[in-house]
Length: 242
Image 1 (cartoon, rainbow, N blue to C red):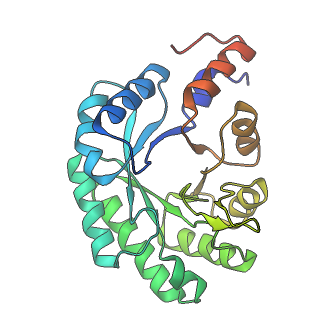
Image 2 (cartoon, rainbow, N blue to C red; image 1 turned 180 degrees about the horizontal axis):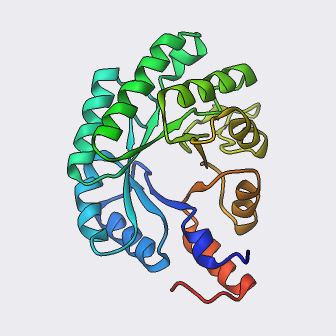
């Protein structure tokens, strides 16, 4: 089957998540999302209502992050935040797990947390993507355990990263890796057939988007949306979406 620019566009959750972004930035980024007809715009909780207004009449969905970016909110707060985002117009929820609980092996807490948010999403006709934060959750067995939990509770997606999982490097600077092909392969292998995989963090070029697709990711977070899809239009001669 021939790949089209639209196929690539509908892989992209256009991310509008940086702490410094203003309302004016939100409006600009939503216009970009509509221009390129991406899958969704992923925004911060306070911005959901405005994003829904800006995207009304388009095929671009509204997504919202929960417990973002560090995952430290209580389960009750994450559920409340989820319900509020859905009430404001979100139909996709990207939740960050409690990273410390996962690192400490408190899998009951993690399962209770993911189940609670998943149930809140499904009750509100929304889907949930569970962010592992693989720059912090680095052990293979922990990632496998998270995939098994997400499968068991009926989560819709497993997702690599927030894009804000900064780790101190040997030179003293902080940076993150984000999605890796090895992690995406592992997540695809160990998640159930009904669970999809989302790459996030570090997917900035068309070649990277193609690579994550080829190992099983069906969605990818992105900020370099326009550049990637303009390149796709030029390379595949499939007609520009803009």
